[in-house]
Image (tube, rainbow, N blue to C red; front, side, top):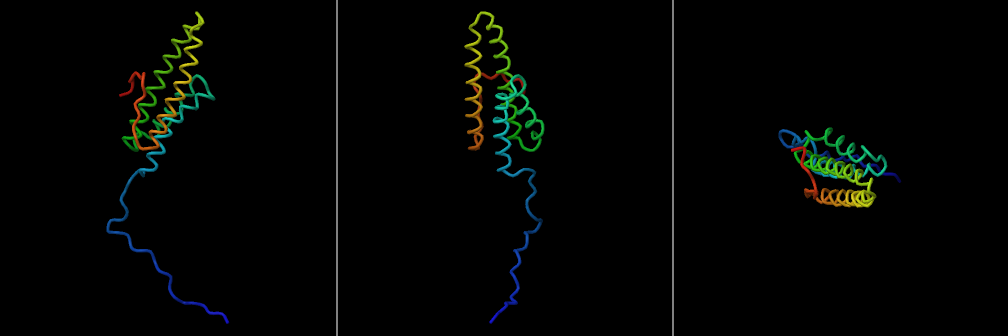
Length: 138
């Protein structure tokens, strides 16, 4: 014996007056873009010279108008990566007297560690200020 129910399916509740709030970027998307502002600098591991600058620059230029948070994280990441580029350039000069090779290794490790710390802080919704940073972009 087969029974079919002809009960109507419940419809979703109506939207409040004015519809859903208009937001350009949700808070979870902002957090993801904040993380990418920092973590994209790890591209420098694969594309040495410009790689650590390209990732944060592309993310910041694409998303800086969406949220003041993304703008701040992008500026901080770019300032740190520009500073690291300058420090690496100085270390290359010191390579002529062989001490620069140690500086390059230390700078590479510090860059990776600070980027990972900043990415973790961004995933927790916190703003991270990199040490040893010259703030070119205000």
